[in-house]
Every structure is written in structure tokens, then in C-alpha cells.
Image 1: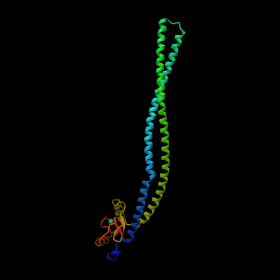
Image 2 (image 1 turned 180 degrees about the vertical axis):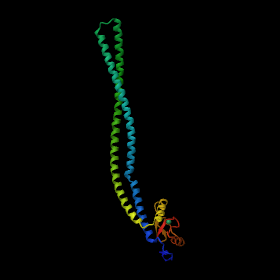
Image 3 (image 1 turned 60 degrees about the vertical axis):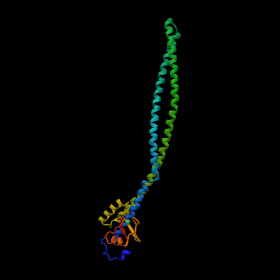
Image 4 (image 1 turned 45 degrees about the vertical axis):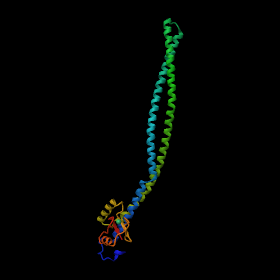
Length: 247
Ligand SMILES: [Zn+2]
């Protein structure tokens, strides 16, 4: 390697430390990819859309359910009123046919019965209209309920798959974290701090290998002068992206 010929004093940190840090970086990158996979599971997106579908269906079901309840109450009331009217009509008819009333009373009762019959017909008509109205709403509620059940079943299935995938990924992450702790143990604290800082601002890559005059972080070439300057430092850094370099 070109800089190997240069007579710089050996860094007190030494190359093994930077090589350890490169191992840490490799493990961190693997962990990052696992975390990305964890958040980007296709089942997760499907779960989200099923969840939204369930919410929309619940809203529709609530409205349809309220409408059904309102019509049922109106129907109950109309049927109750019809029964009262029927009872009243029966009573009046009985009295009319029993006779024994004066001509004026009879005439009055006859008109009353006529009026009640008209009212009864109108009520019956109304009850029938309401019964016709209630059927499609009932059907809609039933259809919405079965759609919601199907969506919730799909949600539950996806949740099972997601939890299983997450369990596997989390176990994998835990193994990598453990190896990372081992790899990081020889790395001095201030170098770890620099590494963490660079990871935050350099898309997760703080340290890269330097190969054939090219930085493995930004993939740009260093001129011989830049290379000489970079590797004269205790911690060599890329002239372009400022990442730590390991030759
Ligand atoms: Zn670079």
C-alpha cells in the first residue's frame, strides 16, 4: 500500500483498534439493515391498510347501525300507535253495532268509526313503508359486519406473521449487538464517541476501508497528497467525506 512506505510514527491507537472499529461498523451496518427490514416488512404495510379498512368499516357500520336503530324505534312506535287505533276502532264498532243509541249519537259514532278506519289505513300504509325501508338497512348492516369480520381475520393473520418475523429479527439483532459489544471492547472511548457522532451525520457509515486509493465510504479517490495528509493523522480521515479510513 502506498502509505506503508511513509515513515510516520506508529499511531498509539494502532491499526488493530481501527480494524476492530471496522468490525463494529460492519456489525452496526448489519443491525441497521435488520432494523430497516423490521420496519419495512411487506406484511406491515398490508396490516396498516387492513387496519385503515377496518376503521372505515367500523365508521360505516356505526352509521348504518344508528340508522337501523332509528327506523326500528319509529317502526315500534308506529306499530304501537296502530294497535291503539285498532283497539279504539273495535270498541267504537262494537258500540255502533250494539245499537241503543239516539239517532244523533249513532250518526256521530258512525262518522267516528269512518274516521278511525281512514286513520288505520294510513297507519298501516306507513308501517308497510317502514318495513320496506328497514330491510335494505338490515342487509347493509349484516354485509358490513361480515366484511369487518373478514378484515379483522386478515389483520390477525398478518399480526401473527409480523410478530414471528419480528421475533426472528430481534433475536438476530441481539446476537449482532452481543458481537458488537465484544468488537468494541478494545476501542478507546473517545474513538467510539467520534464513531457514534460520524454514524449519526454520515448515513450510518463512520469508518470505511481505504482500498486502491479510494475511500470505501464516499467512493472518491484521494490524491497522493491527500492520502499522505490523511494517513499522517493518528486517526486517518477521508479528505472528501471525513469518514475514518482503515488501510
Ligand atoms: Zn470518503
